Length: 217
Figure 1 (cartoon, rainbow, N blue to C red):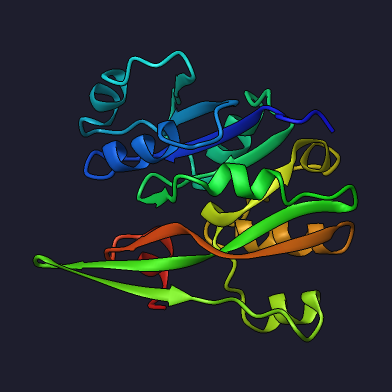
Figure 2 (figure 1 turned 60 degrees about the horizontal axis):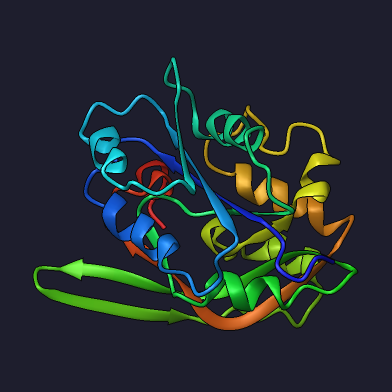
C-alpha cells in the first residue's frame, strides 16, 4: 500500500449552515494531509453553499444536486466523484478529532476492508456541552452484533474504495434511514473489519438528525 494514500472525505449536506464551519474545519485541520473533500449539497435552501464557498481550499470540491434526492441517492452520487483509495463519510453535523484520518488509515492491514472508531455523543444544551463516550464492543461475532444492536456511526467509518466499487448500489436507494446499516451488513460478509478503539468522531445530537426524525432513538 502506498504509504500516504489519498483519502476521499464525502460531506453530504442539506441545510447544514449551523454545522458546516465546525465540520469542514475538522477535516482541514487533520494531521494527515493527503485527502480531498467532496461536498455534496442536496439542494439546500439555507446559506450552506455560501458558507462552503468561503473555504478557499483546493482540496474541497463542491457539487450541487440538481434535484433534491433522498440521502442514499445523494451518497451514491457523491461516491462517483471520489478519487481516493479510501473513503470516509462525515455528515455535516458531525466532526472529527484531528488525528482521525492518520490513525485510521495506518491501522489498515491487507485483509481489512473497513475500519470504524468509537465516538462521542455531543449534546448542546444551552451553554453546557454534555459529552457521552460511546464504547463499541464486538465480542460475539460481528454479523450477530450488527444485527442485534447497530451502533456503528457512518461518520466513524473508513472504507477501501475498491471494496465499495465491487458492490452494486452501495447505498440501497430504497432505504431512507438504514442505508448505512445495510451497506455495513453486506460488507461484513465479504471483508474483515477493524475496530479502532479510540474516540475520534464527535456525533452531534440535536434532535434533527435524520434518524431521530424518523424514529426516537
